[in-house]
Image (cartoon, rainbow, N blue to C red):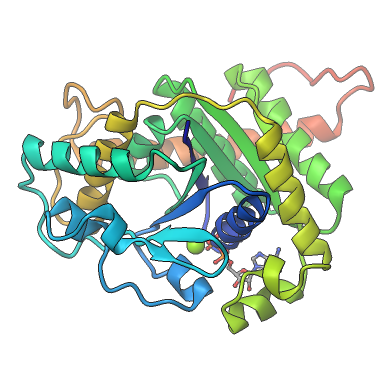
Length: 326
Ligand SMILES: Nc1ncnc2c1ncn2[C@@H]1O[C@H](COP(=O)(O)OP(=O)(O)O)[C@@H](O)[C@H]1O
Ligand SMILES: [Mg+2]
């Protein structure tokens, strides 16, 4: 069974793409069959980290110009890269049949895959959230900055609000050591447990390490370029933790059709269409939904800042001062 895992974060530049790449390479080194999908539609990402240049993307598959196997770039690290699409081509008029074809094509090609790690754009947007709702496992990257924490919390809250039932995990990014990573996890998990009744799992810490930017410059995954470094060990621990988890089943059809929708929406920002998170009745306009999320994020940020400061003054038995609701 393939495990579909989307990696996201409240804000960009926290180390998400490097996480996807290095965890994938580590999993492959442990004999898993791994594909990574670049669905961060803003910027070229995984391809740059790998030093490859995709000529065809998922868009070609959607438009019937290529099969999934045609576009997968097989790297020397035993990880296959599925290049996303910047959504430049007009794909808004795709029929059900075309989406069905894509779903069938990718289903076949991913049958033998153990892990499909998906690098998504940062931040909360309707397309991304709607896609995440269809992914059974969402991993949120969090760094120790107030905005990263609050944005991660807001993202988890939006998922919960929309009825997300899959697994939510986090990794601590660019932290000094595992103690600070755990402290970060504690902050997020106490808040989500208390206010959202959500159990967030911990995948581990990725230390801040100057070797990482060097590996990025060399366009070689850090776990390959510096296999004995602290950061390589961090990524391998995450891979092991993933291997130790029970897998969560996916509705592959829903997942791939939402992915196509995300490509369409994110890639064509000027087209405002009525959407709702669960993809059913179009309740609000995209602008309205988006505004709601931004409002939500702002409100949550203020509340979470209070929660965090309350947590810092938590009594030893672990109780937080009453009176807040996030
Ligand atoms: N653990 C880390 N230690 C040091 N620098 C890091 C680390 N993670 C990320 N960076 C820096 O941040 C940059 C962006 O990383 P990237 O993985 O592309 O982030 P994202 O995908 O979240 O935007 C890297 O090129 C690197 O310079
Ligand atoms: Mg990225």
